[in-house]
Image (cartoon, rainbow, N blue to C red; front, side, top):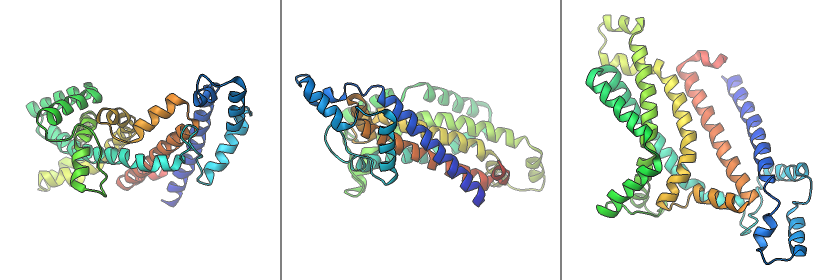
Amino acid sequence: MLIFIVRRLLAGVVLLFVISILAFGLLYLDSANIARRILGNTATAELVAQKTAELGLNRPVVVQYWDWLTSALTGDLGRSWFNGQLVSVSLSGRLAVTLSLVIGTTIVTAILSVVLGVLAARRGGAVDGTVQFISVIGFAIPGFLIALYLVLIFAINLHWFKATGYVPIAASFTGWLSSVTLPIIALSIGAIAAVTQQVRGSVTDALSRDYVRTLRSRGLPASSVVYKHVLRNAGGPALAILAVQFVGLLSGAVIVEQVFALPGMGQLTVSATQQGDIPVVMGVVIAFAVIVIIVNLLIDLAQAALNPKVRLS
């Protein structure tokens, strides 16, 4: 198991390095007018050249990347070129908002997907058809459209929730729960639709296996067979698609945060990208990449626990 974890961690480090190179190279292509954006259109050419030199944009891209990399390895992601704030400070508060949405959505998705997928696989017939129909509808409707309808119905018309804003969990748990409920619902619908289909297919396939018939012939209750044996074998594919959904939720949260005016990574990513604030954008990219690598490692460990053969791959 230790070798398995080390191999996954080394692969994650290599992936992180490659992502940082690609992201920095792409951002460098659009760095020619950053000094002008910072100083404004009225700035003289001399001031623009001075600012460009101050930011180090007149140096070769390899030198710029090396300076960024050596600083990042010590935990220094630099400062924003536009407001001077430390990138780590900008990320810390906003990352908590986004992660609360994504983790909450993942938990809701995992629970409801297992319930609906198992229900559809065991009952079949009209129940299976209904679950599949709802899944297709949920997967087809864009998340931002669901978010708009949720705001219109539950915030504006019924006044059950606030339309916008975020309350930190440290300030008020009920306030935090109220502020993230609608965004989590908006993000969950599409994810539940995708994972439910995978769970249904895996459980249906597992139920047709010989070992299930053997367990049933021994008089084990149907619920025991499903939840103790079938789900263990069907869990691998479901975990894989759940990991994919987690990555998609990180990008989906960017849009949903805009709808609910949440101070998460979405606003920071959009504004920094539009401005060309390379230190902030690189910080966002690395933060998301680290999260994805950690999640994939946890999924690999979970799959290895369910199926020891995975440890050899």
